Amino acid sequence: MHRHAQQAINGFETFVVGIFMLFQHTWIRDDPHSPVMHTVHHFADPYWVAIFITAGVIAIAVSFIPSAKWAHYAVNLLLGACWAAYFVAFVLQDLHFGPGVHLGTILSAFVFIHVLYDAYATGRRDRS
Image 1 (tube, rainbow, N blue to C red):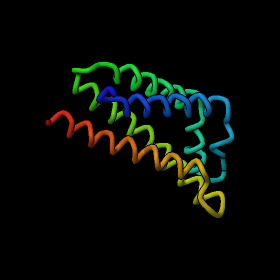
Image 2: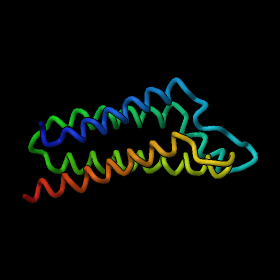
Image 3: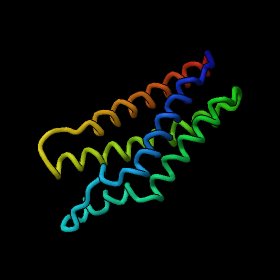
Image 4: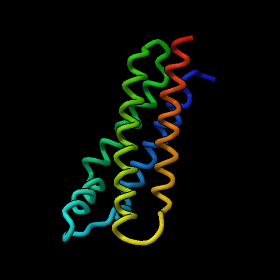
C-alpha cells in the first residue's frame, strides 16, 4: 500500500462531501436574525463548496507524489483547515437550532480527527 493512501482517502471524503454539499444546500441552515448563524450559512455557498471540492482533488493528486514532503504537509494543513471550519460550523448549527447533535457534526469530527492523525503519522513516516 502506498504510504500516503490515507491522504488519498481523506481527499476522496472531502471531494464527495463537497459534491454532496453542492447539491444539498439545506445542510447548513440560515437565521437572518443571528449575525453568527447568517455568516455560518455562507459555508453552503458555491464558493466555499468549490474550495472543499478543490481541496479534495488536490489531496488525491498529491497523495500519488512520493517525494514531495512539503506538499503532503501543505495538503494535511489544507484538509485540516477545511474540516475544522466545517466542524465548527456544524457545532454552531447544533447549538443554535436545536437539541442534540446531528450526524454531520459527528462525521465531520471523525474526519477531522482522521486528518489530524494522518498528519501526525505522515510526520512520523518522514522522520524514519
